Length: 199
Image 1 (cartoon, one colour):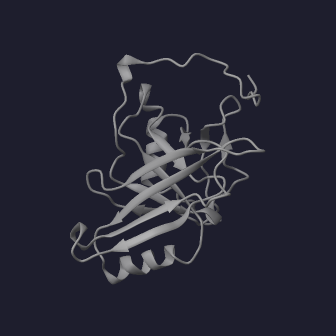
Image 2 (cartoon, rainbow, N blue to C red):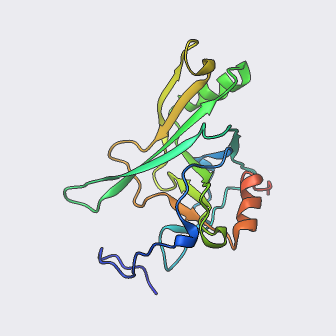
């Protein structure tokens, strides 16, 4: 069935009581330089534009692990109304850098250089057969560093930061679900940081 672009509903919205909602994301997150994504070979479902069936990086490129503890990292999104165009969605990722080592500060400093990023998270709530476990933020327009703070008297001296959609350059969909065949295959790609071997 082709994707319906009219804005009309095409199916029931139901509550699956066997998969009740659960808050939070898993501790580890993968951050990807947007320019490293191979968009020609990244595929979306022909039936549902919010499902990515393959997230492909360019040859020799990899994502980067951001380790978390408990619910230190988080994601959010919200609708952005447009007056003369289809509405869009602002994606936000809030992250924590626990150790303010020189090596970690160097990467934090890189975030402030103005590049765009894509973020892949694993939700605590995973849905039926764990098919809704992974979400991708910022795939179309990318996220940029919006805030970064450090205070020796707060948050145990950790570096707190946010990546977010830039106003006027929001995403065309809410964060997309990533399901490459099944949960196991997608989890393997995630654990490997979506790395692609050099050609």
